[in-house]
Every structure is written in structure tokens, then in C-alpha cells.
Image (cartoon, rainbow, N blue to C red):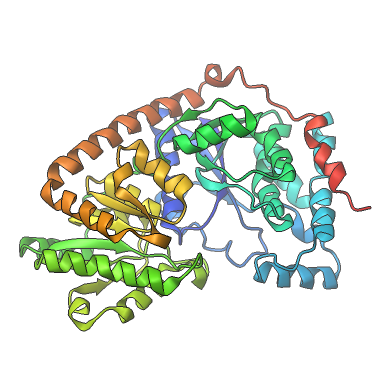
Length: 467
């Protein structure tokens, strides 16, 4: 039995993040028996922590879930400081000054020099950190869940978020544990502070990236040579025996000759929302005009946590903006489904148009063609390029409609060949990922990694201390 710790778990309302965790557990379980400890992004005091992993625990009830070790609450002791923090958090840290950022980040990370000097140190003065250390010392390997969360926007708030995200990995490296960054997209570490925060982890972990854009970025910015694997969610298993009313209805529609076209649409905070909505409607109208047997399904890939992340908010806006003729051909899906059920929904589509990258990944890995509308070119374009679909990804904030229409036509003209070719590539890369998973559980695979932070690595902590 190998003890595996998986860090940076977000929330099962986000089916992409949930699917990544489920797929990693499935992959590692195929190699050897494992015992999993899942480390949340949320503190115990955060109301989002409770119930955040309902789908993961439903599939793997033996998993132990623990809260984030980031000791933010003990640091902000006074009621005034706590209220300032709560207000700042509510507004995405918009009111945290640079001085306050330096103060609480330096305090939170002040445990590291002691741990690096003596990894056997049993007490750091922080109960939150000490509880985590007991768990990490029992781990044989620490895996940072894949995705796109290692970045900073070069502000104090962005650097604080980056330090918080990497903190569990700092502690793991301080204990000389095997640390693996699995299938990551890493970018936007341009400020000196963000480089100083991330370098000790990047230099002391086995870094596996999910697309070549990140590989090129790390080579250029940090001089790192990294391997590239596919996004873990491509490897999520299928459950074809699932029986649900929505799946039965979809089968019934297919038997009537109806082609179901899926759309995933996310809340848009990056620019002109009405412009995006109008262009999405234009694509739907093109499809339903071209194919009178088509119906559009608006499917929520993400349902929280929080309304600003809930796809159903945008779905309602798109539906309300559609004309009557289009509305008659649109089905709004309002329920919250697990990643496994979503994969079965996507598997029954004719094709998908997705603004959520993992809805596209779930579709492609189920043998269903997909067009990606990218809100984050670094990851979406890179992941689509990995499966040979760079001509089927478009920027959602400035959608080139003629190019989108052309992509739709290509799918209609050669759907089966398209789907089979992509599925073959996905399966080949899935085998590669499984081989890598096996190697990660083997000491020999990462024997050349020089684990252990140095005082030089964390000089930035001293630099952050308030004067």
C-alpha cells in the first residue's frame, strides 16, 4: 500500500477539477493499491469546505480529506484584522495593501526555515501546520492536482494567492517528500516575487505539464526542462451502465433522428458579455438553420462554488437573449451532475461547443467531436494542439464567426473520421499517462530530483518582512 497525498483540491461544483482528482486516483489505483489523503484549497473555517468533495467521496469513500494548511486565521488574531481580511476576501483581496500582504505572508511562511534546518521538527507554533505535517510525513508521494492555478498577476494579492496555493508543497518539500506537479498549465510568473515564490517548488519537484505552451514558458523563464502529458481528465473512466432520466431522454431523441448539439457557457467577466452572448447565439442559429434536425442543449459544467462561477447564470442569459424560433430548439439543463454523468451526457451528443475546457476534454475522450471557445489561450490552445485540434479552438472574447462556422461544417462533413482520429490520439496519450503514473510510484523514476529547500530559496521571506 502506497500513501498518496493529493494537494490543491478545489470543489466538486467544478466538474473539471473534480474529474482531474478522480482520474488521478483511478490512474494510480491501476498501478498499485493506494491510500489517499486529499488536501483542500479551503480552510476548515471556510463554509465552502463542508461538502466540497461529495462526488469524490461518493466514488472513493475511504479517502481522507483535510483542510488547507495555510495558517491565515491564526495570523490575523485581532477582530479588526479579521474583519479587514473578510472584507478583502469578499472583494477578491482588492483592499489588502502591500504592507499587510508582506506582513501575513512572511508570518505564515516563517515556519519554513525551522523545518528546512530540521525536518524532524514536531511543532512549528501553528496547529494548522502541525496537523498537516503529521499527514505529509506519512505520505510516500505528494501529487499536486493538475490544472491551471500556478500563476500570479504580479500584484500583492496575486502573489499572496500563489504563496497560499503552493504552501502545502513547500511543507512537503521541506520534509524531503517526492513532489509531483501533475499535468499542469503554468504561466504568468513574471514578477520577481512570483518567481521567488514558485522557484523552490519548480526546482524541487517532478514537473509534468499538460501542453507545450507551458513547457516553452518554463524553459524560457526558469530554464527548466519538463515532460508533457495530457490533462488527467482525458483518462477519467466511463460509466456506460448509468441510468438516468436525462440519459434515457437523449437516447429517445437520437432514436427519432434528432442530433443533440451541446454548449457549455461560463459567466463572462473578461469583457463585453453581451457581445459574447450574441456570438454564441449566432453559432446556435447557424447550426439549427443548417440542420433542421438539431436541438441545442445548454449544459452547466460548473455550478459553483458561488454564483460568479455558476454556468447556469450565463445559461439563463443566453436563453433569454435567444429569439423565439431558437428557443423552441434549446433545452436548458439545470441540474448538477457528477463528472461521470456529464461524460455520459456528452457521449450522447452529436458534437459539443465548449467554453469550459474540461467539457471539451470529457467530450473528446468519449469520442465526440468538440470545438473549444477559449477564455485562457495558454491552456485551451495548448491542450487542443496536443490532440491535433488547433484549428478547432477560438478566442471567446473575439469569436471569428466565419471560422467557427467552417469548423462546424467540417464536423458535419466528416464526423466519424474526426471522432475516431481524436479518440485514437487520446487513448494513445492515456496509455502514456498510465506509464508515467507507474513510474511516479517507483523510487527509481525520480531518484535524480534534488529535494529540500535551502535558505537561499526562501530569502524572499525575509525581504517581505515589514519594516
